[in-house]
Amino acid sequence: MENFSRPRPRSGELGSLAGNSVPWRHAAGRALDLAESGQPLLLTGERGTGKTVLALALLARRGRIGPLIVDAAQTPEGGLAARHELQGGEDALINPMLLRHTERLGQRDVAALIALLDERPELPFVATYTPDTAPGPCLQRLLDTLAASSVVLPPLRERADDIRELLSSLAPRPEPGRPPLAWTLDALRALEQHSWPGNVTELAHLVLAVAKQRRNSGPVRGELPEAVRETHATGKLSPMALAERTAILGALHRHGGNKARTATSLGIGRATLYRKLRGYRGLSD
Image 1 (cartoon, rainbow, N blue to C red):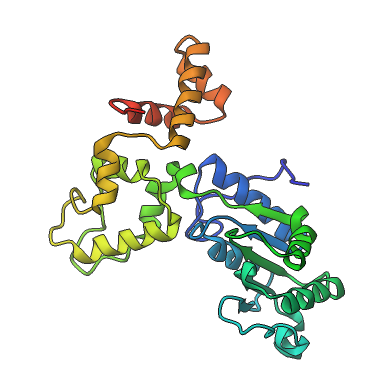
Image 2 (cartoon, rainbow, N blue to C red):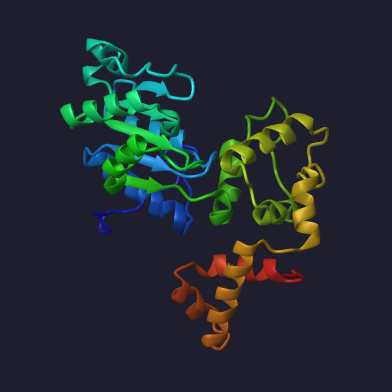
């Protein structure tokens, strides 16, 4: 069970993906609790949500030895079935292990992994899983085994409050004599309203592309991709954003327009509520 008495991870505690939004702090906090309890951990979520970066940060806290990293997407079918390949030799008996793209494992490899976890329950182990298709019976058994120690990382569209912090951590180091990358308020609002189908990975690529293409030293204004600018310009809400707006405006109505009480009832900060309400101005369904 999650230990709610523990402080949630602070910004920067778990790598460059750390943020302060409620969804991120809840997911990262639960992952940290499970990892430090010694249980094998399964990180799930959409592509680009930062599962590998978080996994590496968690394993780094378990000791000084670097993890054995196995990418099922790049391993031939049956490549994990042999015990010496799965463990990486005798030296890996004390190594933490990161398995990426668990959804790509074949039946023989899943069986070998289940056997390893049964035989070595003390192994520091983190796996990443991106749901894309229905898993087969063998993979489903593995997922069921890890279900009690699994954490779903929130997509970036559900943690828009973290975008400004992420922009700072993802920005490349400026060249000598040039100021750090800065953003206008309109650019920030456009980024916060975008749906981010590629999540943090997509945001990272955008930041790098903008940094490379810039010719002036002022804040970023019109250099954003057209898809991001159009989201902000059209002012249309996605179904998820529309549901969120409905919930927020409904709570605001129930509390007679009192923003402090509304924020408390929704479990968000007043600054977050004010930002969201400002973003709804001029938006259509």
